[in-house]
Image 1 (cartoon, one colour):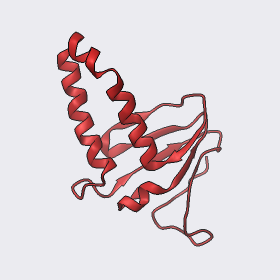
Image 2 (image 1 turned 30 degrees about the vertical axis):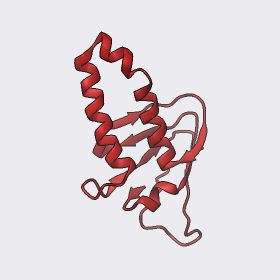
Image 3 (image 1 turned 60 degrees about the vertical axis):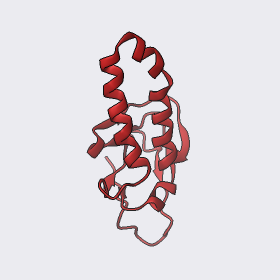
Image 4 (image 1 turned 180 degrees about the horizontal axis):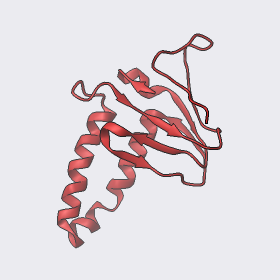
Length: 120
């Protein structure tokens, strides 16, 4: 999925239990969790941010350099969550060998030029 505006973040996503999520421009890979879930693209980004922020106080105490790197990454991630013009467009990719994942096409049955599906 090519994200070109904040509206694209509202698309529903079903992520199968074997799916890996990629945002290449952010150098972010979220491995398969062996549990499926449903959210929006924005929901996945916000959830990932919340997961990273959860242990930041302990990281700051135990490894301040590592915590600082994560803070810098969180600043970048905020730009993606807010669809800052400086990062658009960006890609949201799901790789699911089981074929059970889905990104909503609000134009269905008309082809969506921002969404491509490859079967393997």
